[in-house]
Length: 121
Image (cartoon, rainbow, N blue to C red):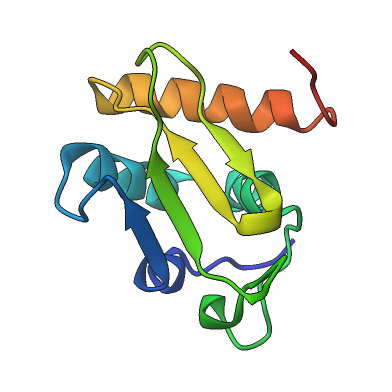
């Protein structure tokens, strides 16, 4: 299983409708840093479609349009919703959860439910 440098991912992340100092973003990074190696790999698989780290680090993360940084978008809708990912764009839609505990529970549920393949609503 690959060693995933969360600090490198954090340095190479863009935000849409969030700021790095927002509580939800601080919670998000706390959660990722707390993940074990297996959970980090599952998260990376969930948001990029691959559990492999780019050879040159996350500054060279590839998406549908070539090099494409990981991005976190504030998801609209209820804060009870699960987060969702767009693997072609290395993007995570993250609801504005009201606590770090809730975010971790929902994020792990999203990651684990997404392991089964494509889900249709």
